[in-house]
Structure formats: structure tokens, C-alpha cells
Image 1 (cartoon, helix red, strand yellow):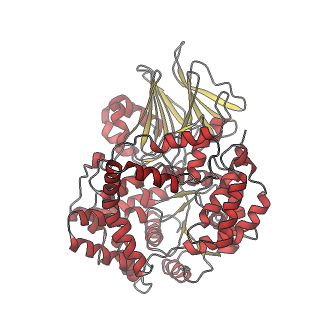
Image 2 (tube, rainbow, N blue to C red):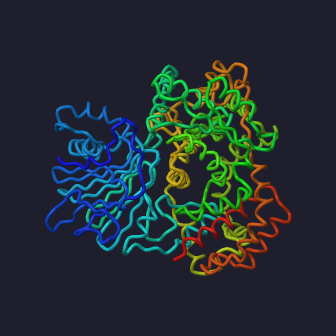
Image 3 (cartoon, helix red, strand yellow):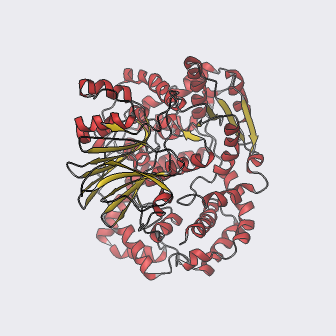
Length: 635
């Protein structure tokens, strides 16, 4: 067994995945100048696996043996556990993650994949079976993409790097761009380029000869066969949470985005505690202060940092965005990304994150994932109503009412109609009308078309969109709306894209973001936790609320309700978008691509900016965002 040892760290700090390499399965080395190319596995006239990296950048780990080759980029959290399981099967002197994975594959084959834990991109070439695997870590912290060029396969964590290679199709994916404007993401494999595809979160690409498939290798509840935990098993939560935070701290000096909410408060308190236990420097707290007093949490932010004895950088929102403002900075940022910017708040948080970089931090921790995994999905209401469990509905309503800072009627309407009766009645009504009066559905589509007139004026493009939207979807056999909500958090293409955006922005900053609540073992535990066990004392996020209340008894976490920044976000767009639109001028690229009708789109935007309807500001941002991105990426 041979291995590349060029990128091993000597300090015990985990290696973060990079984006400057690509693997190539080919009969000859890839013809790419300015790259250092190494053969990983294969010989003779058969296809071989190569790894290439930009000259001056580090190679990922790679190893070969028994006719197989492995390229491993990132961190393997459970390497010691795997070594223990492998026992005598291990060859002497196994030192890297690539070697460990190679040994595991030689012993278990594809059964190795669900055992892996970490933040990584993995490529395996099995020369004996002529099988290629491309694996993305279970929750997609590290991206992975691939392209086919003739009989060759290229694979990388970077779309941009793949697009630079000879033969890779650079044409923009027009249907995906229109779907972006419509908030539709029908495929978790496509990207915004025709020649590049994605390996989705927790999936593996499998290629044998010309047969290509992508399948899920990790699933906390396959086919909704959820192994629900018992109440006493929930005592594991604290230990699993500790392990998740420790994994994040293992990447080097840490900062934390301290928002003042329950999620970031729990991560901050645990990171401070575990840093002391491990003998690490205390993390740096970074807080963004919003100018709207209704959503400002500055008092809580300062109180938490002070009681934990943390260095604390507090930056007002407009100081973080500077004179250019949020929207103009976001339009600059989107040009550097492989798809249009999804998180419009990034420019403000990048201004804050720079403080972490200046203080020597390598990672920043956040409370992201708490909303998905610590709360009861309100879609539980539909399950309870279907079972006529009115006591359960009332219990759920009490939890929602005591956990969210919204008008009572809005909360009640959302729970009882949007998440209760509507999911039960609307599909039934649609099936009934489709059977008894299909003409009514046709009239509805004519009166309220799925695609507005100013969008996709190209007839062929509109036909393709119609085909994509109406082609048969996999039948939803789930009986539980609650479980369906959990699957959305795992399967929605947007989730993979958000993780990729976080990776790319972190690469640009030199400060990677990690989310302990998106740790694979923690998600596995919380996914299998019965809904009402997630609450304690009748409030959402009870698993961390009670701990924070004991640790900070005077801050008010016991009664804290979630705040929303929707109104502030909309006002930022309405105030800044007119100037940004004037600077962009004609929306020419979208028109040239026949994605939009210029006159119709301009009128649509001007109407929104004039009347400022609630909930429509985001439509203006999406158009500006896509036009700016397309200008930077048009061939």
C-alpha cells in the first residue's frame, strides 16, 4: 500500500477540505497546464485514476493498493473507530485517512460508506471491478461535482475548476435559471452549468462502464422505518452535542457567530466549556447588531459573552456592510460563486468574519440547524388532526404560541390551516376535481399560469419547463407529514446548495463555517426523537433551553421567543434595489438568453418597487442576483 503524505498535519488539527484539485478517470493523464498531476491507481492500457492540483497548492491525501485507489480530501472524524473495527485486517503503518478508507473498502466494499463520519469528498477507483465511486459526506459539508468528457470522468469539489478543463461544457443551464426565479428546484443533481452535475448530500456516484447511478448511502430513517428512541435514550443528547462541538473545534482556533438566540447561545456555551476542558483558547464571539430595536439582541449577546468570559466583537449592521450597503455587496459576491447567491445576509456576516480572520481564527461556529432539528415541525398538526388527536393539537398550539414572537392570529392560521387542514384537504380536493371536472384545472392554469408572461418567452424553453414541472414525480408513500418535513431538510436540493455556498464563501474568507447541529450523529439522534420529546416545559428547543436557563438564569432564555428579520430584510431591498437596478441598467443577459422579456420584466419590477407589497421584495433581489451572476459566467 502506497500513499501520498504531503498534506498530513503535524499538530493534530484536522485538515479542512480544499477546492484546488480534481480527479480524472482516464486512459491518459489529463491535458491540463499549470497543474501537478499524479497517478493514483491503474496501469497498462486500462483506465487509471489521476489527481491533479493547481501548482503551488496542496494535494489531497491519496493511497493505492490491491488494484484500488483512493483520493480523500477533508477530515475523517471516526478514523480511530474504523481502525479498531478493522483490527488485524489493517496493514502496518496506516497513517492517513486515505489509507484507512482504502483498507475499509478492501474489507467491506460499499458497506464502508454508511460507517464514515466527517467533512470530506471521497473518490474510489476499484480497478478489478472497474468501478468508480464519488462520495460526499453524510450532511454535505464538503461539495462534490463531476463531468463526463468522452469516456473520461472528472470529479472535484470545485465547479469552477471542472469548467476550466478541456471538453467540459460551459453552457449555462437555462431551465435551472428559470426555476431559480420561480423558487423551484426539481433536481438535486443538476447545477447551473449543462456540463457539470452534483453529487447530492449523503449520496454516492457509482459508475461502472457506461452505467451511471447515484444513490443514498446514509439515511436516519430509510423508507420512513424510523427507529424511534425511548425517553431515557434522549439522555445521550448532551454527550452527542459535546462530541459535535469538539469535532468543530478540532479544525483550529475558533470564532462563533453569537446571535443571541437559543441555538447560537447553546453552541457558544458548549464551545467555551469544551475549549477549557481541552486546553484550547476560548473562542472569539462575533455579533452582528441590527438597527431595528424589534429584532436587536445586543443585550443578550453581550450578556452571554461577558458571563462566559469571551472576547467579543460587536459590529453594527451598517458598519459591517459599509457604505455600499447589503444589496450592492451581495451583487458583487454573487459574481464569484458557481451559482447565484442564496443567503443575501452573507456580506454583512463576511464583514464580521473578517474580525475572526484578523484574530487568527480558522473556523467559525454557528447555531444553524437548530430550527431544523431542535423544533417540532408544525406539520405535525396534520398528523394529529388525521388521528383526531385534539389534545395533541392543543399541546402543539401551546408550544407554538409560547415559542414564536408573531401575532396570535398569524400563528394560529399557519398551524391550523397551512400546516393542519390544508395538507389534508387540498390533495383530496385536487384529485376529486381532476376526476370529476378536469376542465376546471385547465381553466385555473390559464387564469393563473405557473409561469408569468415576462418569464421564458422562448417557446422551446417554456416547453422544457412544462415538461420538468409536470413529469411524474416519485410517489410519496409517506403517511406522516411530520416525517415528510424531516425528509425535506435532508433531501431538498436547496440544502445541498446552501452547504456548497457556505464552503465557497469560507474558502474566499480563509475561515470555514461549521454547524454542530448539522453533525451527522446529532441529526441521527434528533431525527429519531418522538416530536414532543423535543420540548421541555411546553416550549420549542427544550433540549437546549433548559440548559441555557440554568447556566444563564438572569438572561431570560426560559421565556425567549424566536424573532424574525423579514421586515428589515424587505426594507433593505426596497431601499437599496432602485439604485442597484439603475447601476445594472438593461437586464440584457437574461433577455439575450431568452429567459425573460425585458419590457415585461422591467414593468414587473417597477410595479413591485412602487407599491412595495409585503412578501414581494425577494422577487426584485432574485432578478438582480441572477442578472449579475449570469453576466460574470456567460461564455
